[in-house]
Image 1 (cartoon, rainbow over the protein chains, first blue to last red):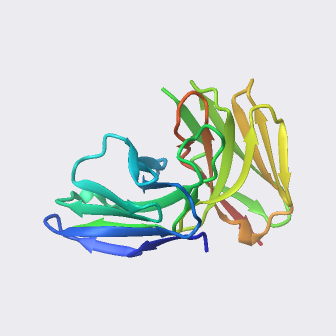
Image 2 (cartoon, one colour; image 1 turned 135 degrees about the vertical axis):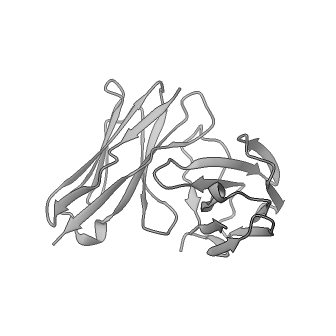
Image 3 (cartoon, rainbow over the protein chains, first blue to last red; image 1 turned 30 degrees about the vertical axis):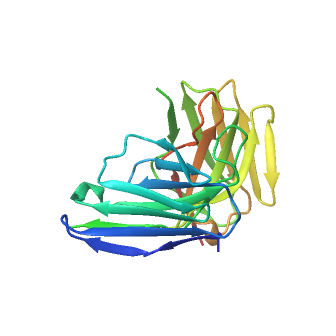
Length: 116
Length: 112
């Protein structure tokens, strides 16, 4: 149990569907992240939120839309996805948002997304 | 551009032996390096952090070294056990950017 909970664990969606991934952290952290993990590729940082404010968006297509209503919850809204978007989507949190000081990143178990 | 290299081939070792995993990097001067463990279908779990001014860090059966001249970190698991089988990721941060950059990971298999 890492203190970061993601739902659903598995999601299959059609290219025209709209779905959302949900993340909740119970660690009292101020920063939350969405990462994408595809086979044989490094973890790709998608979005960073600090105290509910988006501080980084790494050129992610607009079909991925994040939402952070408070410092404990993070959503990733999905619509009009492509089959190549199938991957493991990991939510994470850390005490502060920057990588300056050696923040430990706490990851959730991930949501396996399959786009058909 | 920054590049992190970890052995893409799985490392198979016998139980009780020491496993050594390598993380090499180029075009980067990180302030620290982290190692994570990832089991199949699960998120990575933090193991150790070593800073640029530290040569070695230990935690139980784990040892990490950091050579900023060679631009390399070695991750050792002594007295390895089948339960150590997993993918191990290295991640670099703090070197002028505000991101933690991950390698692709090396899969370790410890056999009886």
